[in-house]
Image (cartoon, rainbow, N blue to C red):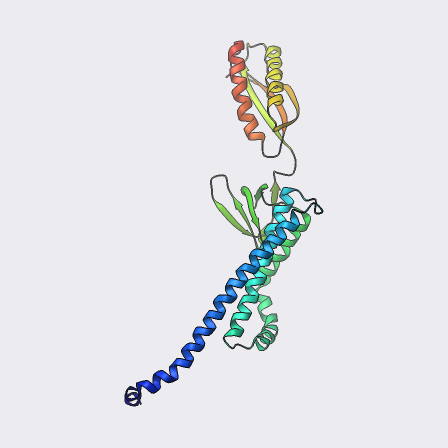
Length: 271
């Protein structure tokens, strides 16, 4: 048999040419289909983005980004699934029979995909209940960071130090959202026991009120609570200020700097 093929190379090549041409044609069709799929995804995402930014929607930036993140996932999954079906059809696979077989096998697969189904359902509940959104500062299952994406299956969170956690929605058991309500900055100042407490409290009030007038992150009243505790030769004073969500830490740092400078000028010793 091998000898026969080598004796008639022209015949062998003539038989292979139609096959190679057919494969090349199918590959070209698949590539064109992929390009059209990518174009359709871009157009669909732009339509969704434009719709979410329409005046009639009246959505906040946080809610808009969250919905766009979810719709983006749905669009990509849907169009890529259609692309796979069309690509298989191009190579002669009978899609109707394949889908019918998938329906028969679907029940068996569903038992093995219970985790995936749970992830998707939980993701929808997270969206509709507005538990958190893209850009929110949260703690989920003990991991703290900023929500970057909310998908049908995963929620991705980026920590302040750069780590990214991808948490399956179905495994989310505890959520703490730091971005929903205003935060409270708590500033503790420890002064010497012999210092004038009334003078120190008065100075604290002036410093914090001046800071509030120049700091947009401070949105509420300043409260000088006075003596918090007495420990040996130290008296601990406490002042609080209502701030925007996630702004308390920055306010505390700036307040401590200003208080240190003001107390130094007033001759009040800070411990």
